Image (tube, rainbow, N blue to C red; front, top):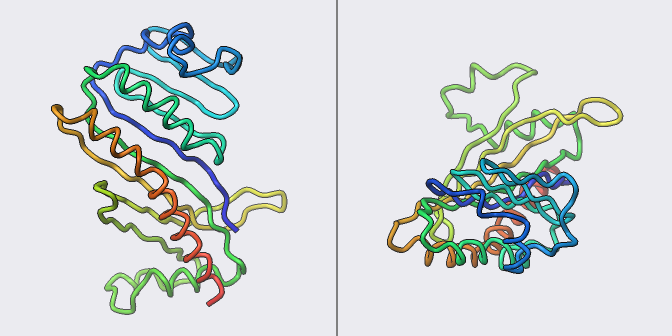
Length: 217
């Protein structure tokens, strides 16, 4: 069983002015509906945090961050919120874009968790294996590759979940897809990269499903 933790998109910028992002500006430009703002939304000259039932939009001088609260509306919000913002502010010095996905994968059999993760992540040829050959050792991995002109960094780490019955072990998957931007083509690249969200998300889903199947080894 896997548990959705967090999905967001971060666009890194230099000297971004949060005071632009007033309620009036967001409504006027059809980015956020005036009836969707929740009471904990915050608007100051240094930070803007917009909360609705579907999203959190965070704006600070060094980045714009769109965090999704609903799996079903992600692609829609990318186009109606994030894409609109970057195209309305084309002269902003954007420097990088990243997709982030965090999920928890629970083992089928908690007793087999150490044995299975060791067999998957640790080769017998690993020179460090003798240092982690005791019962309380736990294992993870870091992997990286190119995906859709972005760099994917996947960090899989053992964690403890707090449940009603106490602590239970699981694996946390942290996916980061990132792309540095060239100043002269930043806006064009952002718009192209945003089209790859679904592909990146589907790849994460495939990896989680593949790993979940291995619990039954």
